Image 1: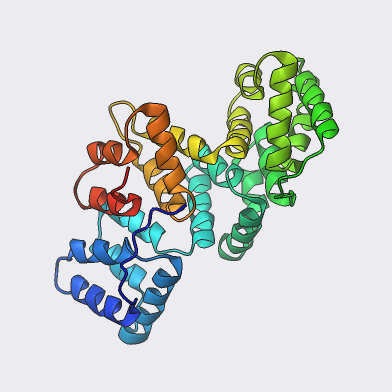
Image 2: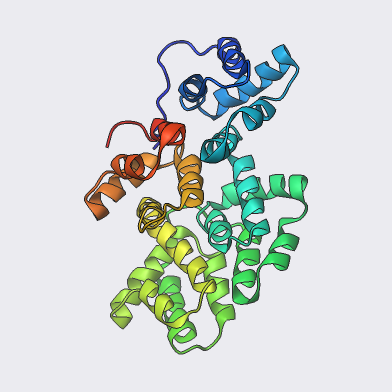
Length: 311
């Protein structure tokens, strides 16, 4: 469920681009105008704004934003104006180039099969073959899992076979805790639907007295373990997973702005209301309040506008 606040008045991309063009005039920038417009437009409206801006002013609005904005605000806005699948492709490419395995793993392992196939096509057209880049920038079992995960079209339905789930639970116990082979782990995680994997985890807990997640944490090394944990956590409760990621980004002396931007910008139009609810439930504090305390200036205003004011 989205937290995006869209004005009830009739949307006019022509009016929006006129106001944005005025905001870009001169040496400075009317940051409030940029935030008030772009942070309150959905994906299709943002695409219309970009098209109309090019039509009326013979330029790319992204070029203007790049020139006029600075710091984290610029990073966040430039990602926000992209179409969601293109944004995932860009975020993934940047993560791989910067050796940000956590970011790259999250984008791949938290998305649905349909989302993966869509951003994979865009990635291939913009940057070259995704599989090639994964082969280049990752290694070992982590690489095998990510390559398999982007290549297999998993079922997105809610049905599962209880007997098959029991067999996979037994196989994973031997593979994870008895270390009988990581290929079996990769096969199950890359081929299973979310519904099947949730069932496997439940059966695993019942049969062996602890969760699959606990076994992975204990017996699998990073970054392979991080990818497996992302998959199983997002299968069970993506809202809780992203709440945890945001919490870690805002814990400690320094705020992980890169993570904060990535998660908020990519999840606002998908499930941010659920993420906010899980954050409140798990950490006894609102996500809005946490972001307000850990960010500053126009960057803070933009993120809070995306999150909405309701806790």
